[in-house]
Image 1 (tube, rainbow, N blue to C red):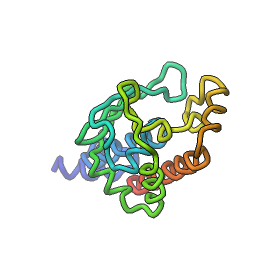
Image 2: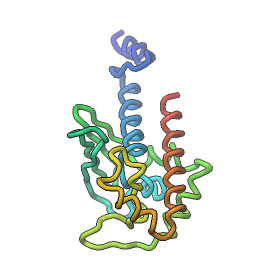
Image 3: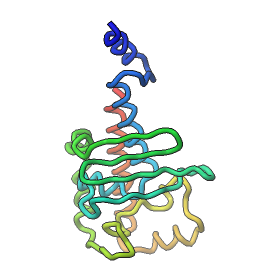
Length: 178
């Protein structure tokens, strides 16, 4: 009888006590972090996993003073933590949501066109794949950082690809919410 009650609670909007609701909340938290904060989201959308750095963790600002988001990933998936909220999503779950998105080939094309710039100092695939400062919640520390990005080769392609990445993640969020 208790299981039936939990199943009923699962159907109440915003309820997080049932397994399905907890799974949905976890996925939404990860997808929202990918869409809004994480500098590596384009790479994850293109490669459906961390092909350039199989184990890594990072802390990012979330746009409010003193608040940060911690993300970590490995070969199994991605985990996100901010304050008291946590979420996890496997790469297979992410792939299920975005792999067949009609706009994803454009992101993959951009990602594969960028040369690998691996070094000990930079763990990312390439600076060209990093989220532009003007699309980060905290912005840039100084306008010169944005100006510097605008002066880089292929700036317009990078910005448009990031906007497409955000659209893909928005569509995935809508699918999970449905």
